[in-house]
Amino acid sequence: MMLNYEKTFQRKPTKKTKFPRNSRRAVLEPSPPHPGQISDDLLRLVYELQFDKVEIMKQNQALQEARQDLQNSLDHYSDLYDQAPVSYVSLDEKGLIQESNSTVATLFGLEPSQLKGQPLADYILDRDMPVFNAHLNQCKMGKKKLLSTVHLMMKGGGSIKVQLLSVQSFNAAKQAFYYRTTIIDLTNCNSEIEAGESDSREFALDAVAALESHKMIGKLDDLNQSVIKANSRLMRQHRRLNKAKRLVNAIGKANFDFLNQLSDELKTTLNDIIEFSEILQTELFGQLNDSQHEYVKDIQTRGKHLKNLIHEIIGPSKSELDMIDLGFGNFPPKRAVKASLTLVK
Image (cartoon, rainbow, N blue to C red; front, top):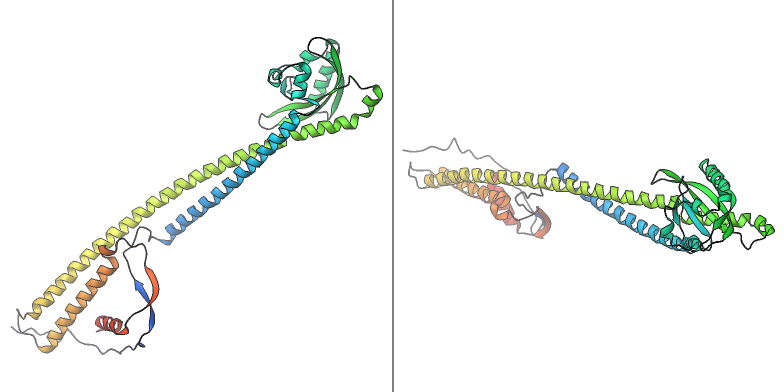
């Protein structure tokens, strides 16, 4: 039986392509898709998450440094406040001592910790209690820099004459008012000096108030909250990044599995075509003329060439490569022209 393939395989005239000898061209070495080779949207998401992570870490570091600087300043001024020659206490709205420095504790012969929570009224003579109560009430009304003269009881008996110079402040952390009070010893002061030292006492109050003002504590608290929020944002970004990575890996694996399956299907089909062309060359089903032999040979050659391309592009042998590498290199033009003509014929 004679098979006629003349009508099936018709050659089409093609133009010859000329390439300069020893030309320098880009060499593209393809590789199978990797889990990192995904859509632009996912790549952009991963990049943004990584960028946000770096930015948050930088902000966190800056906040930690600022917090440490504030803490060092607070410790420094706290030491100055504690060792100040002027007695100083902080009173709540009930007149209870909340904080005190070492000077006032020494005045009463106690430790600062022993004074906390004690009513300042316990150390004021009974005859001066109306003055102290009026002083405290006027503090509650928000009167600025209130000045009153009372007598304090000393350890072991006796009393000293002092002036109470108070200013109302607001504790943002506790959402409550308190009164910064400077206790000035007037024992060795005559009336003229007592009357003339108003400015000095006000300066002492302002200095002490600046050392322990709620603004510094508020800034420190704000920085602490900022650090906590930054850490929380960082944890959320970590979770988003991990979720995106899992999604990227899942999509990459799905793409890789799909391409492997596609490779198997294409190779199976090409193997069938190549094997059938080899059977035709044996003339088992009939004798072939010269043109038919050439056509069958072309089918076999192109089939093997396509099979090799598929193996190089999506074959398992390249599964470990990350991305397609693009670079420049020398190659023989003859081989490239021959491979191109194989597909064009």
